[in-house]
Image (tube, rainbow, N blue to C red; front, side, top):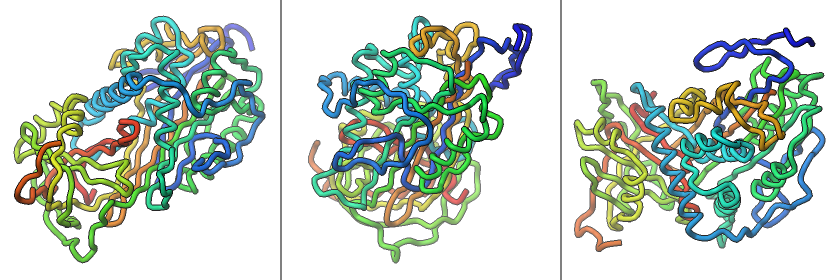
Length: 452
């Protein structure tokens, strides 16, 4: 192929024609499934995720995964705070329009953290700013490793009423080589290596192999994560991440208490939805223009926090949503008797985040001429072309179920109230699912119409 050969890359904002020989692009794709999602190969330790056979030849650092990283508490706190900042920032970028919304800040952060491990110079600075990575690289990745361990650590009495799986897997094309420090970071902190496939000689076979692995890892819920035609002789690296969460409520809703009731939409007109009801013991918080209720899941490690703006205040509360508001709610919940009404809902969504992340302040990572991911290959020959993300959530009387998978493709307390608090979520509300062990926001979104 001569120096004048060219290819066309379709990005979120524009079509770019570039010379082929040294081009490599990095495209991030995310999808969320409804059943057990695995994100990487774990060892055989107690509580490990299911191991799904991976195709390709394994290229991995000789340095083993660190099952007990010495991470200061301050670093874990900084990582969790950054996760909340990024979650709220991304929420505001995605919340345009009038529909329902669900996404996984954790999945996007984890996938981008592996990309960030290879970023250098201004590209790294911009990504750190947008992703709210405040720790230096040598402390950030061990902190992610510790967060991962906290998420997947089984409780004292493991139970199928709580499943939280998280996994990383990385794939490369033949002929690409990666720097040892980059491979060390992946192995030690993310418990993964790189699987070599023939992207150039057999792009469809490679795509099928990755999609088949993802399908098995998600128990058949995601069967076509990588679309046809994505792989070429320029494909260098594909980073995949997924999160699956299914948890029974600490106190399940009684089906006999579920009733058809109106849900008042912002756009006008009511819809009839199935509203679950229960009187329970939970945490509540009264903020400026809203009420919040924290509903714990089995085991108490995770909870869903639902934020119900006062009538006429949805836009103001949504606009004010930030990490400080989330932290304030979580730190000042008042435990007591609560009468809760929560609609059953089930929906999914997806978008390409590349343009949004660039707009948030990391344009260089998505620019062929400016991107610097030389920490991966030793050469500045990679850039990000796509960050596609899809999400799924289902809420019923027994449990909440949500999942996310991300694939990055590289080419070239106070006293309780004296009376029960009443929180009936019969109009649009925000929600986020948080993990107490790590402080991470696993999923986040809003319900504008539970019947949509």
